[in-house]
Image 1: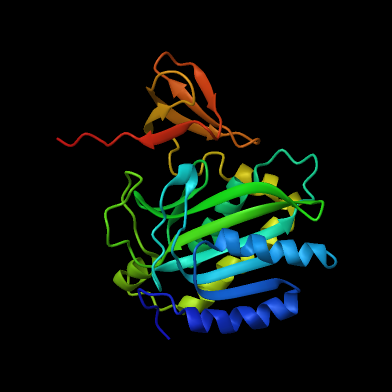
Image 2: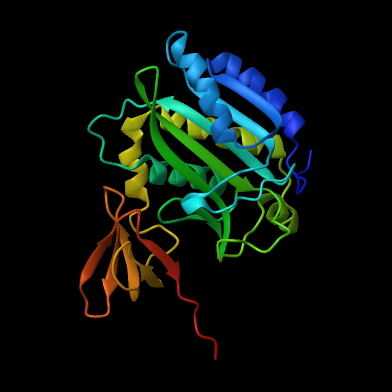
Length: 274
C-alpha cells in the first residue's frame, strides 16, 4: 500500500485496537471530537478511579476545537493529520529532563528512520525543512490522586488549506512522502509514532538521553533568531545548545550566553537574499 496524502483512520484504528489489547492501554477511537485532550481526560478519570492506573490513549480522525501552545488554533480536519492524546502516570520523580523535548526528539527519530529529515524546533515542535510538521502540548495533572502527564500530539498529514494562524508555514507528512516518491503505509507509520510516544512516556529513565541527543542537533542550532522573552524587550541572538534541563542557550550580540525557559519564544530570522 502506498501512502496517501490523507491518513487512513479506519486502518489505523484496527491496528491500534490489536496493539492496545496486547499492551494493556485504555483506548478511545472517535471519528469526531472537540479535543482529544478532553477525550483522554474523561477516559483517564474513569480508568484511574476503577483500578490500577494504565496508560490511556485517545485518537480521533477530526478535532473541532484542537489547540496548540499559547491557545493557537490547530486545524484538525478529517484525514488531514494524526491527532492523539495520552495520559500516563508520572513516575519521573527527580528527573530534570523535560518530557516534551524528549518526546519531540523520539518522534523525530522515528521519522528520520523512515527517511523523513525531521528536526526538533525548541521547545517542542517538529519541523520539516523550515515548515512546521507537528507540535506537542504537555500538562501535568492528577487523576484519582495519581500524578500523571497529559500529552497532546498533532502531526499534519496534509498541509492545512487555510493560512497558518501562528505565523509559520506548515507542511504535511503525506504530501512530502508522495512528492518524494516514498512508498509507506500511512497507518503503519502513524501507529509506530503512537507506540513510540507511549513507550517513551512510560520510561522516564530514557528522557535525559533523548534531550542530550538534541544538544547541538536541533532546528535552530547556530541560526540567527529573534528572542521574545517572557519579560523584557525582544533581541536578536544566535541559537546555541540545549541544556540537560531543556533550556535553550543563545549567544547575544555582546557574546554573552543567555539561557531561555519554555515561556520565552524564539523564531528564526529569515536569511537575506542577494
